[in-house]
Length: 371
Image 1 (cartoon, rainbow, N blue to C red):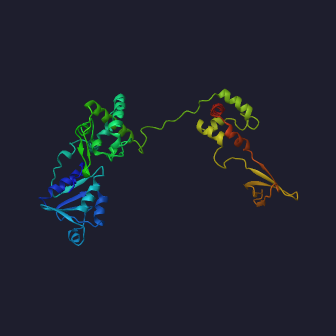
Image 2 (image 1 turned 90 degrees about the vertical axis):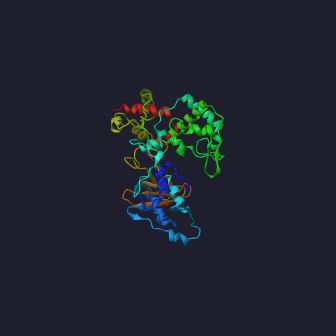
Image 3 (image 1 turned 90 degrees about the horizontal axis):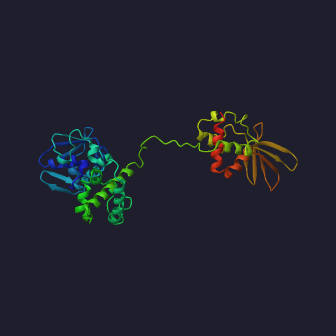
């Protein structure tokens, strides 16, 4: 059976001990999905090792395996392990936490067990607890990584053209604290699964340590992608305009329709927050709330005039709703009938593409003063 990495070291130790022991029962709270998969997948389990989930034993499928061509087993003293089951057990290695409770036998996990009182997450992922590295050393490591490592492991450490593994998910990298795991691999190389291997790198100890610092720096950044923010959201202050310049702009462009002592009196207090105030005067408030309706007057060739709220207007049709609620529609043929639209916010729409950022900030700063 292929060795299982430290994440499921307890499972691996159980299989090793079961060579001389029978009747072992395994209950794994973290691997329940895989236990379910073992029930539903055509595979075989040895009588000497049974997996249990919530008190329900996985069916002994040794006899079933004999009737299944291609479901071969490998024999060893005291235990038979299905190659298909190996694949399922291999899947367990992706689980971060594998809460395995052993009953019927005591298993010594050995070096893979976390010391008493030590958090398991610190054992597996101490890199996430590292303090920030030296910026100069990280920059040097980035240059060295680009020369010596990028072709295999990729620009973003997720694997390169030459088939190197993803370093951001490497258990070896995640276990490393100060280079104790990575430095020997850089110096001496390492044989991988499937015949792949990493050759020794011609780097000095100082250069190797710089590469390690760079990898940890990238890992620290990548660990936050898709995660919660590290702190409270930064609230930007948009009151960066000149209130006096905003008052001058208002008098020249807006005072013909609006008045600081009329419809805009106290607007700085009525609308909370400078950002909401700015959004309101630039684009209007909530849709269809407190907005004057767009009206239309249709004059037919007979001279009849129909006035109502505009519902739809294009080159071929005009639709309106009269004051009594009746809907009327008219076909358009060029300039017949004559259509006159009264849009109270037309000036706002025409000015929208003409505003500069400075104009917007200045007017907002002025409106905030209208308390």
